[in-house]
Amino acid sequence: MSEKRLTLKETIRRKALDLGFCAVGFAAARSLPKAMEEYRQMLAEGRHGEMAYLETGLEARNDPSMLLPGVKTVLSVALPWPAPAKPGAISGYALLPDYHRIVGNLLMELLDFIRSICGTTVNGRACVDSLPVLEKAWAEAAGVGRTGKNTLLIVPGHGSRVFLGELLLDIELEADEPLDWDPCRDCTACLDTCPTEALAAPGKLDATRCISYLTIELKRDFTDAEASATDGCLYGCDRCLDACPHNASASGATCPGFDPKPELANLTASEILELTGSLFRKLFAGSPIMHLGLRRLKRNARAVLAKTNKT
Picture 1 (tube, one colour):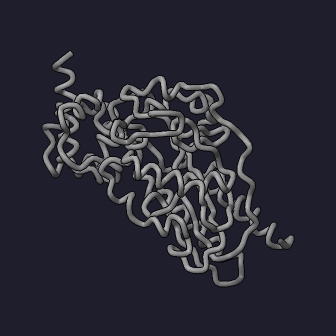
Picture 2 (cartoon, one colour):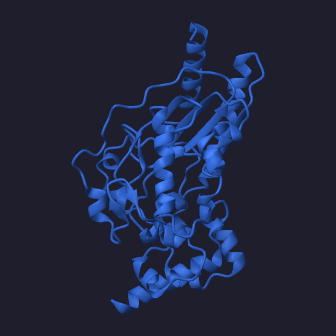
Picture 3 (tube, rainbow, N blue to C red):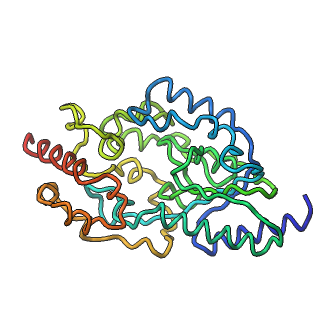
């Protein structure tokens, strides 16, 4: 790799950090056999629940050139998001503007910068949790962080309160080395705190037991057991995040634009059941909860009230 390419890579990294990303890494675009084996095992064991979309795009997950012909480099980034002032019934990230838009816009700004300094045509594609991409595996390959026992990527100094994104590029940039780091060691705080034992083993999540899956991904009505398992949560669950020592000691740096909406933090299940469609759209405009819809949000609220009435 020429010195010119090395300089180009570091210039891109500095720009990404200036944009607000807390970690940036580069990996050669190739198949990731170990990650694909683990992914297929997850599907075979049915740990993805009713998320049928995870069963599609297997070829693209294994071969990024199906998403961008001629791809040579996968640039991975992590963007930190702020912890809520106090734990609540709505996951902290859902109190913020939708991360898909913010991370996507920043990646497109980074892509425009890359094109401006390369002097040649650069084809690229931004990925933010919407394409069949092995995000955590690419972030690990690029040295951005390591996956913890909670199955979330942990970034040194920033913990796991991060959003991930990727730029697929058809230019070759020197790959970074994966981190030689075990973020968890003997710690089992996340496994111990999960109220539904969704973390069946270190690094092994059974989504069918996960409160975030039940309250966000599951499209149908709850069974009685599922409703009880939501454990007072209206949208998502932060327990494994809150328990992780890496998050307790994180730098606290966040990207501009992630200003929480305090009116969401204190929203009660009873108030949600009173919402009309227009009030829902007004209250949750720009929030990830818009994707959930009012019907399922009310489903979650009924489960919370049923649990409260039993105690």
